[in-house]
Image (tube, rainbow, N blue to C red; front, top):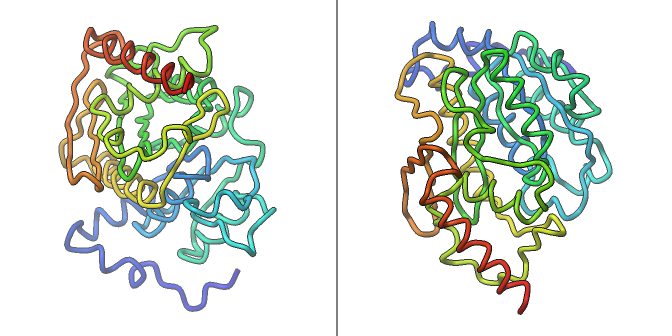
Length: 292
């Protein structure tokens, strides 16, 4: 891994103007943890590496497969069968060979959370949509350690962003997951909590492609790229301490297909009366779709 004459100041000087030189150095010294390097996680890593973030903790246990090709950074014919962690680390080092990267090839779980989050400034969620329990564990651990946590969901051709701050509403209180819930119910709680405005539903062309029980759903590359842009901006604001951050129960959903942005506010999260109504309607719609 040669540096090819790499110089940090030259590589990232075009960001200056939007941030100061002192702020660029703060980004250089920051440490960001990302769990999951698939749909959005790989895009998060490459965006933050190009922003000049200098240190990462990365967790992923999966390998690239052909069905990843439509959206995942790092998915190419030459990378099929290779660990996502290895491929994305190489891509990040090709951007900045000075990066400090600690890899977790077994993924993130209860036994390694302490090491995964040690000395981390911000956590960015890249876990698979259906990794409900792992996600709960990571967000709970972030809160206990005083670490801000950002999640951006690729929905349709847009992105829904939520930020959880240690002193604000917790992930568990917002989403209201319960032990023993079915995959369908967990999925509905997560989806409705992420995007109460549901901007993406107006142009879903083939509902039969949504298979919550089978843990499958349609995706687009545009949504993943939008997620990386929105999450990267939130990371910048949090690390530099400027720009307004609206944590959960506030959220933002931007949909490029519809050309719309919605700011949402759900006090009580999924326990909010509006959310309970939306969840009931979503259950009926899902049931009707499955019946057809």
